Image (cartoon, rainbow, N blue to C red):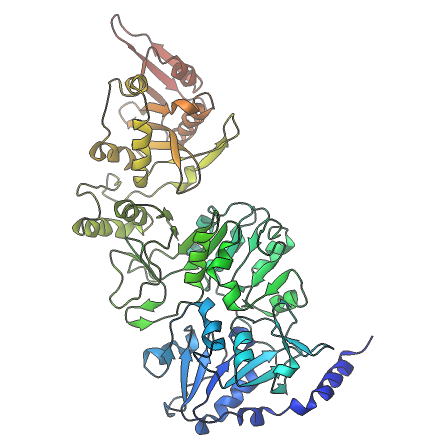
Length: 631
């Protein structure tokens, strides 16, 4: 077997007529040229360092970037502003300040549209500076960890100069370019740039856990850019046969692959393959993708094309944002009039997920700014902020406080959904602003405790069980946004059931009455519901509640199960789960009245502990019961 050194000498000899030094390579650029620099961790560092060194002569040279993370400073202090004119297609930290000071340009554009912008000739590149692997024996080099827009631009530019680096992995997919397409190259053995994500805080961890509940087995995952979306991946350890179609990959996917979670076996589009465009990670990831046929790299116009994305089954797109207003408009790219990031692939994947059968477009964000002084759920976006995603784009919004489902919801419904996942200290303010804007009922309330504090939804009491028929039934506390589901349950009851439940033939279940049954303090009043169906398509099939009487340390109990679900164990589970909750709160038992015709309820009640039943007096139709809980 030939040694690596011999192979290196062989290809460099073969293509020696194209090899030059970095200084000579940059001298090929003249003032007024438009120059593209390869993206992210594949930035050709030797070439960019020399580019900056020669900046004094490159007046009015436009530099095109997509995502620049390298250490080189393009704007040293006390230098002329016209040495370069940078044009960012996505705003990273290295150029954010200069763009907002007017020293550099920003071009808003969807990721999947970028390649065509250049290959069509509408925007022309004079010189492309790229970093690629050494060629194989057939003369093909690999773009390695970054194909995205680098390949199509390199193949359409007037002059392509490559930094050939043996540390660049060879990757599969549409990642190759032939040496014949390279005009000049320099040889470099520089370590590739690495990207390190910040350690998640408690808020990020809570968001990750919440998002994971939306991910079903066999789903296909897209993880958006930033520190927050990648946190979700660590909470997918109990999922099965996940796939991945995503703009970029990170180190976080490696354990999911090694543990047999990310298999791609159930993907319908590129089955058994991860499809991506570039890497954003460390040497560990680069070694993992090297010559790995399981991971395929394609240009952005393929990976981020919404139609292609929609060909995946159950595409879950997870993207971060900076603000969401109460109607569902999303700002993810600006802070007021200051630009912060850009479109990237967010819109492409959000819309692709909506096309995907069973797909879920998800926006995630902390409920407040880092100092907790401002809510990120707002009545209106900050003045000057751009609307990256419209009210119709987003299906789910997730914070550390829960999940808001917006798809197909009215303005009133989505306002309440979003208020309920805002930070509790801002909910009352948001409620009042929503009333002023006539978004919600003027008498709408939120749950408060005796001290006047907003009540926190007790997520710890969420659980589920399998019905006798094998259906998954979720049991959880009721909350403000359950009002429509509770009303639907009540209106579905026939006259007999209404009489047995309310001891009268109640015909109307108006907002003014029903809202008090879902806005509860989880102390004196605790209500739980039984639900079937996914979040956003739930049906309430039963409910149970207690009202605490402190004088006797007992609680009045009642419950209801939809007729079609009786005999499936729903009523028994609701009853016993509420007993668990009551016992945790120190309540010694339940009591209440039952219509004498309601024999099934009597049977269920007797299973709760020591039961005393007082028969009805002559002419009465209700019996009284007391249940003392057993230890």
